[in-house]
Structure formats: C-alpha cells, structure tokens
Length: 104
Image (cartoon, rainbow, N blue to C red; front, side, top):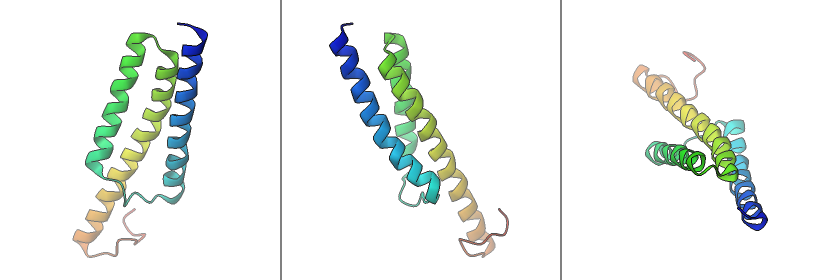
C-alpha cells in the first residue's frame, strides 16, 4: 500500500473514531442512555466487530485500530444501556421511582 493510501486510512480512522469518542465520553460522563435504541446499538456494535474482522483479514492497520477502539467504546455503552434499562424496569415493577438509589 502506498503512503497516500495509508495516510488517508489513518486520517479517516482518526476522524471517525475521534468523533465517536467524544459522544462516548459524554455518555459515560452523564450515564444518559435514554436516547439510545437498544436494537440500533446492538446492530452497530456487531457491525463494528465485523469491520474489525474485515480489517484484520485485509491486514489494514488503520481499519483494525479504529474499529478496535470503537468496538471497545460501543460495547461499553451497550452494556451500560442494558444495565441501566434492566435496573429501570426492575424499579418500575417494584413501584420505585426511576432514579431511586435503592437496589443499585
């Protein structure tokens, strides 16, 4: 692969992963996952995992690096979404307020 192609790949990886990292950081900081669709985020995370596998098969370091980082962040947010929603539903069944600190 030539220098320009590698540079283009690393630039794209930096921009897309960097922009996702900003949103992920906001989500981690606020723990607000109310606007995240579980179905969409599950599909997104699986898609990133497949892009990672594709990058590995092509031996493409920009694709592999970007998708490894994005997969870690996306999987973390997905786990956070599932955990928070499970707790919210459990509290609702018990008649507790959604933001109650009981049963954490």
